[in-house]
Length: 317
Ligand SMILES: Nc1ncnc2c1ncn2[C@@H]1O[C@H](COP(=O)(O)OP(=O)(O)OP(=O)(O)O)[C@@H](O)[C@H]1O
Ligand SMILES: [Mg+2]
Image 1 (cartoon, rainbow, N blue to C red):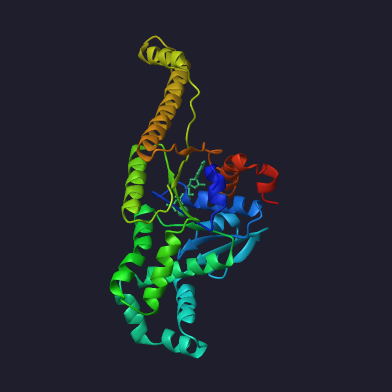
Image 2 (cartoon, protein in one colour):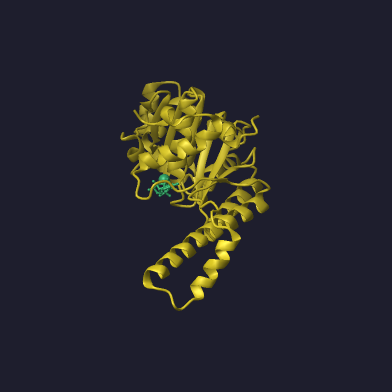
């Protein structure tokens, strides 16, 4: 397996992207899928039963249950519950007529409502079906806590069902989650709370044996060091100075702001590296106020550098 973490992700079959809310999950899922497609792998990027899919703003197309092409080698889908349920029933019962009978049977509806985790199992099954069809499936997962519960469903299902099709499916999904070509990505920000949640999620996933590999952590919106120690000392002195003109004070505050961002990144990077044994991958913020599509492109270009993908290949045409 490649030493290059981005290459390793792009060579996988299934990449599940999670992280605390608002960290950049959707952006990274889209960027990784675009890179997979650029490298010639038949790729699909999916959201899971999202009522208001975020990938619409990136691809300028509403994702549906049936994957639809958005770029060369790249399809887009939203594994919504109804479609996933239909596909699931179809996969476990032989005839279409029986499928419709089951779907229209109120007892089945009630069974699904009251069987904990049945919804999640059905949606995970739809992910599994895509893995059979594509070279690379990238999933824009829910935020970490929900992503954990979703993946943990297979364990509960195995406890609940001693035999039968649900058990068979749960066993298949459990082995897909723990497969050597399945990877988990966590997107973090240089903030203490986010870093802590990232570490907690990884620890939980590890203790429940959901990870075959060390997950890849992206430290998004990272501010790389630019100030020297001498400049930082100067800033400290200037902050204390009382005889500054208003404009001079503004410059000093801007310097302090930059220093604060750099320190926060350095701390987050150090804590993550110490706890995980590998450094997170740092990605700087792209143009402020950029539209989602531009941000995805900027992140893909940044990540693509290490695998030789060019801006021209990545850019939307
Ligand atoms: N590196 C970056 N530079 C600039 N903007 C960014 C960067 N990463 C993400 N963003 C922007 O931050 C916002 C949140 O990102 P995104 O939607 O990918 O996060 P998310 O984790 O999927 O959020 P949610 O939890 O709501 O699903 C978006 O507007 C996105 O374009
Ligand atoms: Mg999102």
